[in-house]
Length: 576
Image (tube, rainbow, N blue to C red; front, side, top):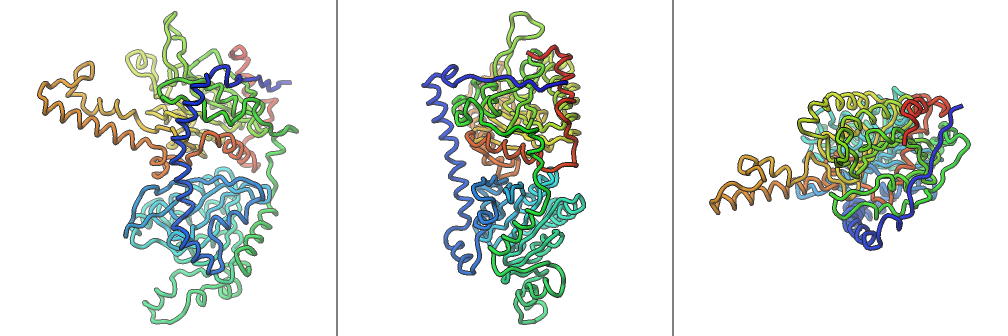
């Protein structure tokens, strides 16, 4: 009988990191974390106290208050897309914190759900540019993980001054309703609570749900009373034409009514409790979640101040896995990559990570070459491991810190393009959930090859020090001005004016690219799902891996005794 033999990994922090480096790394991480923490607070604040007071005066709760009532007591909420639209200004100088909608993983009655809640402190929950895309991304995550979707609707429709950027196009507001339909067709539970305004597109969003609840002051209308008054000269209210009296008792567009927010939220909790329980405990095979021996609280100190400096990726993995145990496979092949299996929250997951240290050159004795780069053997290694994880039903955790593919004559002769295509094909056709973490560098085609966002991981996380770009700002500036530089990348011209112009141009390019690499900017553009603090990373992975095992019957999950991993281990002589 094949057994999964997890081995101890890692060592105490003081054995590999000096006290001075610990302090320097931690201080640098705290500086990088500050904008993230402050940004989260600003987004949660919405349009501020005045608008929260308006909501409360109507006898309603805010979106965040509704989530706090809905969730299991003591459970953590994991938001997705916090920084969408961060730093953008719209018509009239207005901002849209979080694109005016909260999307989050929320545990309800012991089951993870995807909650989509209009932020009623931001233009009465209106849809802004990127609001539809944010909602659709949340729906897609829920569809792929088969998570129940809970809509907390309080939406005044499109923010009309910006409608041209949110109404048309393949991912415009109407695509939300297609996603509603796909979720329904694939039997992913959808439950909607309507708490106030529900106009136009906001009115369509809850209708396809399995259950629709309305509070006494909620209404759903294709057009609000103001528009009807203008178009048909009828002096009526939105509540009169689309309140619970109409939709619960006459139109059958809603199922039940409740007196207020808390009553409807209690009904939603009851409905979620009637769904099948999570299968996560079943797939723990009698085991349980346990903390790493080397504490996850040490993670913020592991990454060096200088992003060009290496660190020990295995020490990082040891602070993510239960009891700091790990089964490394193919450890003596493609040493620039680390592949193996560990438990996260008592559940098996595959790990694919970049080794940052110098590695032996396989063809030149005594020579070293840098890690954090994809070479031929490493590409083949992670292609095979990715296929084995898919075959066995293991979710894959990609820990990216990559500078890209190897380049040059040797790389081309070895056919890296072909090997890379093999890896891309593998990741593009995998059915098992893949979660990508951009730890530090996420550069060039290496970002793609290691299941970056264009290759549809079910979730992509960044950290406060992530640098997502084709290449670093200085490198790109050299490429942009290559014709003005010599072989040592020095400016050719001797004319002071021309030299100054080239220097200024290169500096401008470098500064712009460096600013674009800011993880908050990537999150604002939805190039990554969420920016998480290093100290939060294990908690996020605990939740993500559990969600991968919550629902059954939609993907293959093999008993560990019959994993392909065992064959892989034997055929590669037992790894390290």
